[in-house]
Amino acid sequence: MAVRDLDDYPWDAVAPYAARAKAHVDGIVDLSIGSPVDPTPGVVAAALRDATDAHAYPLTIGSPKLREAIAGWYARRRGVPGLTSADVLPTIGSKELVALLPLLLDLGVGDVVVHPRAAYPTYEVGAKLVGATPLASDDPAEWPAQTRLIWLNTPGNPDGRVLDTEQLRAAVERGRELGAVVVSDECYAELGWDGRWATEAVPSVLDPRVVGDDRASVLSVYSLSKQSNLAGYRAAFLAGDPALVARLLTARKHLGLMLPAPVQAAMAVALNDDEHVAAQKERYRSRRDVLRPALETAGFHIDHSEGGLYLWATEGVDAWESMDRLADLGILAGPGHFYGSHFPQHVRFSLTASDERIAAAARRLRARNS
Image (tube, rainbow, N blue to C red; front, side):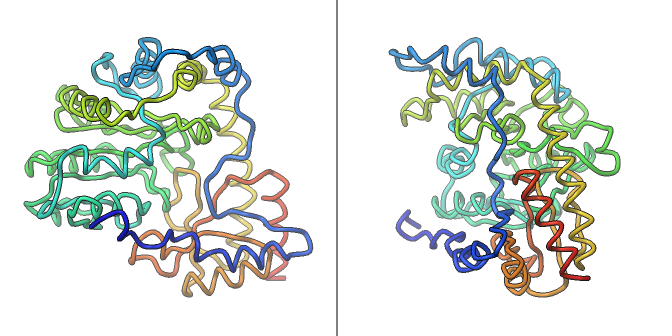
C-alpha cells in the first residue's frame, strides 16, 4: 500500500452533521474531537518564550534536561523507577509515532500488527502503509505467530477501557512468546475516573508488576496534549527497552524527526509541574459529572469510560442515526464506525469543550426526553 492508497480522512464524513449542528439557535456543542480548549499553563508558555533563541539544531534524542524530566516523571507519576536517558526519546506528538512505528521497526508484508478492537484508526493506517496486516483483537490467545507489533491503549480511545497489571502482563508475556514488540499508548493515564481508578493510579506497561526488571521489547508512549493542554506543541515521548530506543533514535536521526528546542524546554517544565495537571483533571471531572448523567437521561448507555477523555455511549441504534438526532440538538460527536467495525452503534463524546458548552449540551439532552 502507498500513501496515495489511503482512504479519505474519516472525519470528512462528519461535515454535514457539523453544518446542521452549527445551525442550532444556541450554536454548536462540538464534542467530536479531543482537542483541548483550556489555556496552556502559564509556567509552560513562559518556558517556551524563554527558549525562543533556538538558533542551533535541536537534539533528536532530546536535551539532557528533557530526558531527565521524562525519567523523573515516570518514576514519580507512573510507578516506573530506574529509567535513564538511554531509555527515553521525545517524539513530535504521539500520532506520528503511531503511524510510523511499523516502518521504523522494518515491518512489512506477512507481518501482523495487533491493535485494540475499539481503536484509534492510526494503528491500522501505520500497519497498512508498510503492507502489514492489522488485527483488531483484545485477546492474547488470538494473536497469531506472525505478530510482530502489539499496540495496547490504556485508558483507551475511544472506549476509556483501563488495563490492569494482570492484563498488561498477559499481553507482554504473549508478545514475548511471539517475539513481538509490545507498545502501550498511555496518553490518558492521568485521567482515571471510575471503580478502582478513582483512587488508584492507572498502571503503565513499564510498571515492575508487569515487566519485572526486564523491559526488553516493551515501550510506553505518552503525550502532554491532554494533561497539559499542549496539543499545539506536539509534545510527546516514548520510554522502555533501551535497545529499541537506540534503534528508533538512529532512524529518527536519518529522517530528521526532531522536536523543536523551545518545545523541549516547555516539556521539561510541564513534566516537573504536577499542580497544573491536577487542576486540569478537575476541570474534566466537572464536565464529565455534568455530561454523563445528561446522556443517560437522554437514553444513552455508557460502556467502559472508566478512564480517559471520552464517554463511549450507545442508544442501541446505528451510530449515524444517533449522529443525526444529536445534530438536531446542535451537538456533534464521533461515530463508532470510525473506531473499527465492532462498534457500529456507539458514539464517542469528548470532554474537551468549555464548561458553558458542556452545560448547554446537558440542557439539550435533558430537554430531548422531557
